[in-house]
Length: 146
Image 1: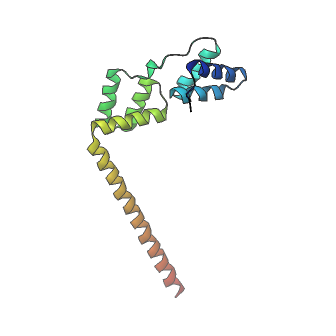
Image 2: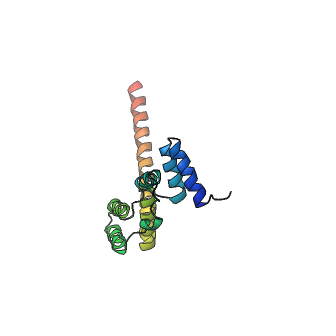
Image 3: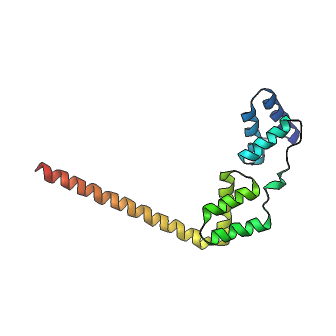
């Protein structure tokens, strides 16, 4: 499938706006650019006003923001790192989480593997606890019926 040209995308967005389908126009913009919801809404408002949309260069975070994100990851404060990344780039939550996850793998791949292994052990423990509780409930039920 061919990707539409920039002019075709702009024409499609303008047609959606003209038809009163602002949400559809925002979706088109987000699908084509990977922009977050707020950024896409702002771009659609600019297009509707006859102005050009912002360039995609704003999605590149400044170096100091990336150092802050890296420091937060190193301190184990991933949620705050995602928030800082979103603030610096203006991208949506999913895009920011994906970017921070990728950065985390780059910074310390061993920690990611260890965290995943710990989660797997925790899941096994929860399942084992559930099985034990189920057996105890079944035994209690059988003993009360006897």
